Length: 272
Image (tube, rainbow, N blue to C red; front, side, top):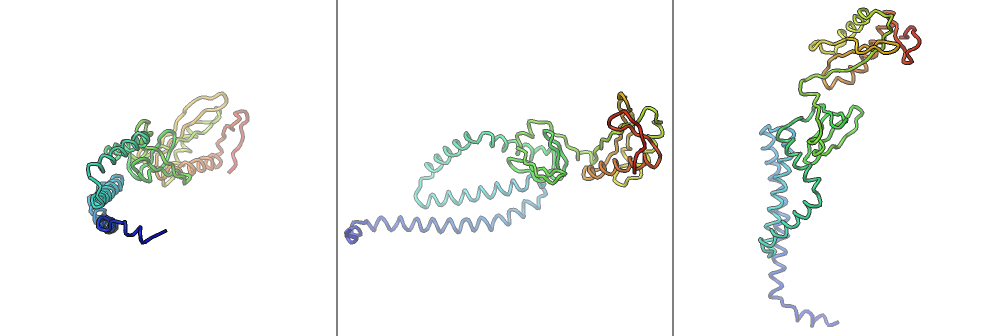
């Protein structure tokens, strides 16, 4: 192969500008991305100082970051020689195609904007969605992350949250802990109620206001169902649930209160 002949056929006058444009575009791309990274530090600090909230701040930072990077790519395309009108048309067609393929994701994106705007819950709130209970760790554009009591992270699409009923346990600052005790018909309810109330009033994580509630829920075939309803802060829910169950059982043993066993047939003393 005659390389000299090939080199002679190359139009160097037209090739040099192309190479120079590519070199310039690469240089602008590298410098532009470096500048975006530097600018985003100041932008992030400025947005965080506005105290817009932990929910919307990451979204705004990401939005500005994407916009600046798009501007750099747009400038690079112009340097290479791509017509801006054609570039915008191709980009629009690409966005449309991706949007049609990701309709569900776009719905979650819109739902994320609604959540950030109206704030039905905030980071740190305890909420329940679709029988899923957890603490809000992060509100993302497409999903909300919940941390359960068992230290599991639940990723729930924002669209699901908008369409479903959301129970926010942190709005009022306290939640009700629901317990049930099976009491024999022969036992004295005023006595049982006094024992339970003394237990709840002595627990540090049980709120005095609203006051704990103790009452008869139902009359079963072999025993009376007693409802025990202490109130606690959302973060203390699990601790109060376990501690109240233990202390009530211990108090029944101490005060010689008989209790109906789960079979509902035999009555007997309770161990410590």
